[in-house]
Each structure stands twice: as structure tokens, then as C-alpha cells.
Length: 397
Image (cartoon, rainbow, N blue to C red):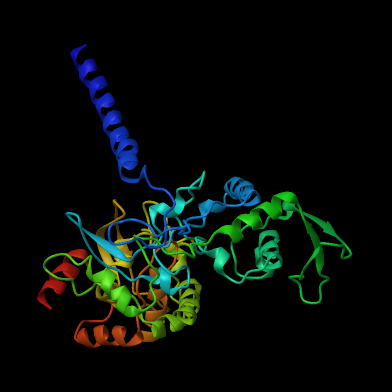
């Protein structure tokens, strides 16, 4: 009986602590947030007649939020432009590649105040598709959004977004208010669809998603100097490890899109010129439970670039821990035959996996791969690394 009492008390204490941390703690931190002016005076007061942000959504857009949630869009899309810091432990953070802003997903990092007027805050946790926090700022008109909602593959051939034809009425001939959907078959007849009220609600919601205002706690980031200034404020005492990368330059970002496309081809191709990575790590990057570790959310992928390049050149064997789960196997260097990928192919595929499935990290260049390859020219071919060797090798360099 005494043990039952202790056990019950432990459960109640755990629940009480969780409630205090997640409910009371969050309320103390964010409970008094409300719309605010874009900038404040030095004493914290706002200028007379200042506009307050965020603005409330129109009624149709609020209804669209319910439809968006019911359709499960939140499963694959986030709505948060993330700041670029990496947690090192003991509360310390260091700069991380800020590709959210550089990809054009927003002009600043999202703040808690951005969501105070939303009934359902749909931050999401997986980026199978792009972040939508500012999709309303893009030049997508109603017709484009309806086409994408009806059949994403009619606009983006390799999209894995599920179509929603049940939100539309299909007609053989064009009618007032109908939208023409191109045929996916060469020479096929186009289709004509009429949006339902549900479809119009979703489109209204998507067009309302825009953080196009500044806040006292976060202004627009217009230049690399501003990026560096924010990043520097997160540098812990003791400096920044060599593997931490500042956000990519505008020039590098302009090259990221073709590198991602080339990297995806290397990732999925099985045969000469391909890495065959998809066989074990799967199209989702989630791997196979017990057998092959995930790439999504893995510090092996998002962390030390040099370690990742070394593994790509020679492979990895032995026990490792990924996302809290231990795996014990052998991964030869990617390529057919193993280790045959060029510096550029390795750079492309590593850039792809570092920026897919919710990962967000800096690109890798062919010159970086070449530098690592040159430093290991005396290492026997196909001599796979172990985790312990990688650690000791890093310390001796």
C-alpha cells in the first residue's frame, strides 16, 4: 500500500510539474502578448495612431483555417520562419545556416506575437513541403492556388502533395468561374473545374498568411551584416566551433536550387552516377526502423560538415546513435561502384539531405569535398570509418 501511495504521488507530481511548465510557464511568458506597433519609443511607449500588428484574418480566411486543418495540410507544412541557431547544450546556442530567410520564406524570423490572434496555431513540425508562414506574400493568384489544391502535379510534376479533387466540380466545357487544369498526358484534353466554397475558404486562408510587418522584437533582415549581427548575439563564451556555418550568401543561395535538384537525382538514382541512398534511407529520409537510421532531423546530417564528407568518401560501420536510437551496421561509400561519386556529386547530395525533410543547414561545395579528399589521400580505399575513429581523427587534426 505504501508503494502504491508513492507511485500515485509520483504520477501526480509529474503531471503537476508538466502543467506548471507548459501551461503556467507559457502563460507567464506569452500570456500578455497582444498586437503591437512595428516600433516603439525608447521608453517602450508607442507613437499616437500607430497601426497594430498582427491584423486579424477575414472571416472567410478563418473558415479556411479550419478546412486547412481538416485536410491535414499541417502535417507537411510548417508556418514558422526559423531563426538560425544550433543548441550545444547547457543553454548555449551558436549560429546555424539561416536558409529560411534566404530561401525567400520570409523577411524575418517568426515571433510568438505573430500568432496571438489565431484560433489554431499551426506551426507544424515537418517540412515535407515548403514553409507557408508567408505564402500570401508570394505572387500566387487565386487560379494558381486552386490548380495546386485540385492537382499539385499539374503544376509541379514531382510533387508528392495529395490532390483534393473533391473540393471541385469538374465540367467538360468551360463555364463561368471555371478554371482550366492542363492534362498531365501529352496531347490530352484539359479539364475544367469550379471551386466549391470549401476550396475558396482554403485559398482565402493561404492568401492571408503573411508576416509582412515588423515587430519591436524582430525587424526585417535586409543584409548579411544584419544576419551576422543577430548570429553574433548567440555566440557562447569560448567561441564558435569550426563546423558551425554562418548563413549562406545571396550568391550561394542562388546556386542552391540547382544543387538541390542535382542532389535529389544522386540520392534517388540507383546505378552509375547515382548514390542509391534512397534504397536504405527511403524517399522520406526516415530510414527503416532498426535497420537503417533516418536522415531527417539527424545531427549526423545537420552537424559537422567535414564528418559528413568523410563518411561519404569512405563509408561508416559499427554502432552509432541517431535521434536517440542505436544502429549497428555498415554503410559503404555511396556510388556504383561504392566510392565512385565525384566531388560535385557528393556536394550536391549532401546539400540535398541537409535541406530536406525538415532539415535546414548550409550547402556543401565541391571544393570542400576536394579539400577533405586531399587531406585523406593516404587512407586506403573502402576503409570505413567508425564513430570512435571519426572522433579521434577530428581531435588530432
